[in-house]
Image (tube, rainbow, N blue to C red):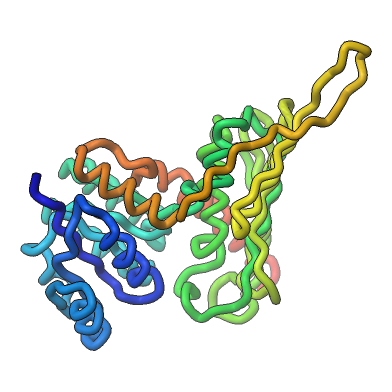
Length: 315
């Protein structure tokens, strides 16, 4: 069977890691890279033995599938060009700056029958994979995703930059539409909102309190779930899960018991890229489809709208 010809667009922080993971996989071969910085593209091409281009459109004749790791503002144009040309696409989150643009990309992928996987890496975090097998219906969720400030990613607000990871997990784990949003955000070091908190109420009664910051002194990436079956705490950075449940003893006493969650170590990015390659190879839906990504983007949009409404009061 012929190998999948892979291209990578954007040879920055994430694109470099994508190349490393694709090279590990027997089912594909890296045939081309692209970056607006020609020197970056040439350096990567020399390392991986492939063609280099400054214009991403020049990749189209050379690839069957691409991963795209360019600034979010360029997602609609770049991903749209490949999907329109019949190329399968792995696109880092968020899909686009706006919900309408994201919806257009999903519609284009579906109309052309293309594999379109969104890059939500936390879906492949071993702690989340283990939790998926244990979690019932959460009633209350609390998440904190706090990072120091880096210029990279500030082309969008912290909701699309960081919080969207946790919104995706909520969309995956909470089996109900969003009913109500309260949110506040502040522009601290960039022109976009750098710290935000949202209280989300779902139609089944579940409430989530979600905080994201890119202006914090140290990194914290944790999410806690409370439900009728117990308590679960995920540490994304450490890839650890604490899972507890209540057990009623014969005498009526309630004991708190460790679920002994089986967290199987894996490299989340490698697992994510491998899942994309398998979906392309087998022509099956990827584990995180473009339509899946729309659910998180819709929540992000509602949070952004609420923050803007609050900001208008301060003007």
